[in-house]
Image (cartoon, rainbow, N blue to C red; front, side):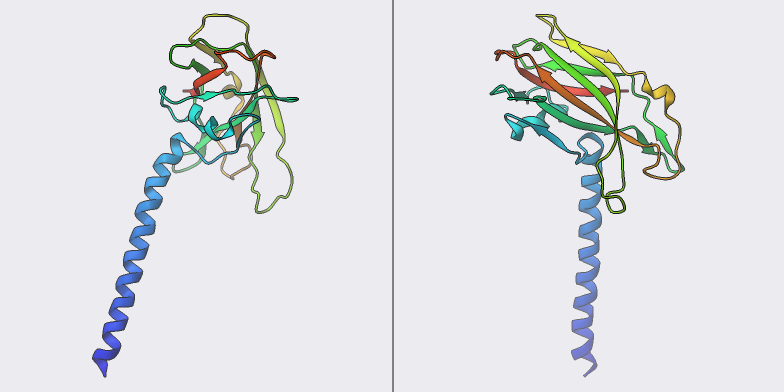
Length: 194
């Protein structure tokens, strides 16, 4: 009688331990990916499915505009939190600039961009849209550039925080390309540099 109880109990304990190990190991892998590709909101009027490729740190992948939007921006990207957990407090990332890279064999398109600090809110507690604070406007009216870098000076105003999400924001970029379709309407990477 004891063997009939012991075997199922042992199998159940083994399954529980194996299942927890599986969850732990896959979570750690996903956490490492989160540092470079956090699951933030992104959106585009055209070619939405490839928009995440401008944040993947791979210059061989790219997003290309396929049509002109009727209104608003071509795309927006929630890029990175302003703070990281250092084990004691949420410390500001030492961000210096935002960099734009052209697609292979092309140059950067003419564009206008707005960089916002989007309030990071706890959506489980607050049912509202986050507030945006405009940091800077960036424009590229030049022809022939393969790369462009624009400074970010908001870091001086950020301070360590102890209560998430108070005082913590998400760098959010809204981009509008020129009104004329061009073969250069393409980005291989847009990144915030530290």
